[in-house]
Structure formats: C-alpha cells, structure tokens
Length: 170
Image (cartoon, rainbow, N blue to C red; front, side, top):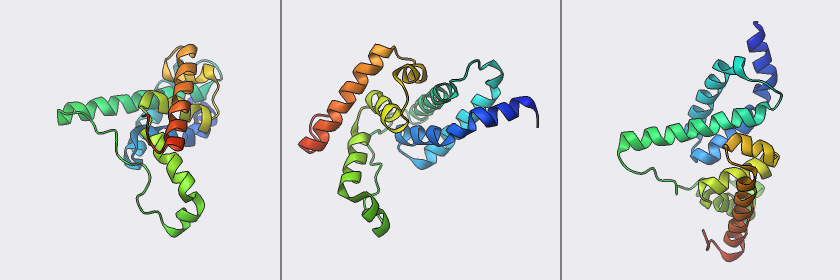
C-alpha cells in the first residue's frame, strides 16, 4: 500500500461517519448523502497530498459541505427550478423499535433540526453532534469564528422556539 493511501486511511477514514452525518442532514436524503460522501472522499483523496496539518476533520467536512453545495446547484440547473429543502427527514411512521428508541422527543428534535435554515443547521450539527470547536467549524464552513458563534446562537434559539413553541419562529 502506498504512503498516501496509508496516511489517508489513518487520518481521514475515522471521520467517515461524521462526513455521512453532515451530508445526511444537509442533503436530507440518505441516497444523496451516499453520493455526496463518495464524491467528497474521492476529492479528499485526490487532494490529500496538499493537505498539511493534523486537523483532518474540519478539512474533510468542508469538502463534504462543498460537495453538497455543488450537488444542490447541479440539481437546480437540471431542473430549472429551486430545490425543495423542506422535505421531512424523519420517517412519518417509525417502526415499533424506532418508536421505542426515539419516542416523540427524538422525532420532535429531528424535525426541529430539519426545519432550521441550512446556515444555522450546519453549525448546530457540527457543534452539538460532532463536538467540533468554533475554530474547526469556521474552517469547515469558511465562515469567520464570529459568524459561527452568532449562527450557533441563532440556531439554538430557533431550535428552542420550535421545540417550546410548537414549530413557530422558523
């Protein structure tokens, strides 16, 4: 196995789940997420020789985010109309097992996260679900740290309003 592949597998592959989770939430479809992550991993591998440093996760998630944005633009060009970003992410009728695990609180949270505007959703997901630092989120999204902090505060406020107020405020 060559050195590039060995380094890539050691440094980037442990973050595959995080890449998929971000793609799933951004794209709101497991099929789209699979495509986005596959494209992102290919891009990451191709450009891995140019990667410097140890912070692979923000670098990889930035690639995932860019692949998502590229896919959205591609769909818009093909369809000639806006992409519907208001589809449901939670299954309308969960299996009995899923119902026991998630209950109403889990579904309400999933729906509240899905209802967030994308710019807020991505920073909330990266901070709360991926436990990334503000600096790493800024690197992944290409936004200044101050913008990350304000989007996170606004995203959390929107989540709270949605969960406490029954979906109003988004």
